[in-house]
Length: 324
Image (cartoon, rainbow, N blue to C red; front, side, top):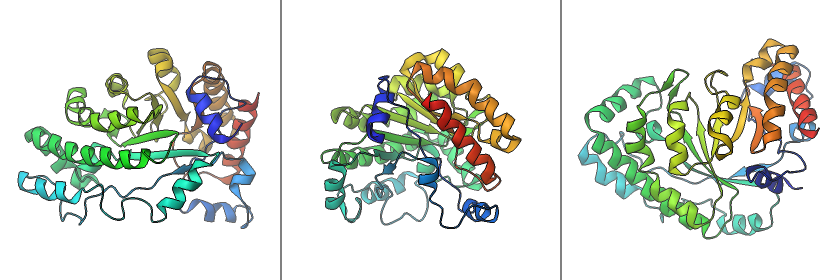
């Protein structure tokens, strides 16, 4: 099977020849460390670890010209809406026509990232900018919703442009919504301000028959998952959370096959030695694989603190177990 066929078979609960072997992504300084640890400079990681290729459609989804400050007052709203023109030049890749033709004949997985989530849309990029956004949500929830609506209307139109020409394998929404203790907003706030705003985007995805819609979260979002599933998402990709906060075995017991899963392997286990890595994989992966709808992967980009030997052991063990 091709990587694309494997991915779609897995998400449809149809047995593939094996599940896809996705790449986690590496932080910038990782390879330098690994070369110092003995990895030859000309090594091809994709050949060493047999990654199934996944490509992302990179769209320009920010207001242009760029706003001097996040839209936290009603008078900024018209400038935001004007700057979110889905038909403006540069929204699509420069070689769009060639991309469309190439993707028609692809055998790899194609992802369409569509949203960066609540806090990034409200201009939060570090803790210093989080406080004003939280006050906005508490004091002016209608304005926050208008900002989310403006972004979603723009994204829906842009997605419609893309999907009219390209068939993708999944769409993804990124949601850095909190930490390991839970989301920074209540389920009610998340539903009324975020999920309601996503409706036009999800309608476009349904119109174009996009089967897999992935909720990518960087926090313990368990409280939000019932609402997320009700909204139309059907796959979770949780990253950089404590293993107990978003345990995939517990989530599968709770939500059944309505929730497909990508990830689930605690990256920190790789730092604790080979025995810890083997325990992490062998206690989690086989049962979820047997149920289907699951692609095992470490839960985040690989950090420089992960030794090359530990990473290689994890990848080879993952290949061995998923091929059985």
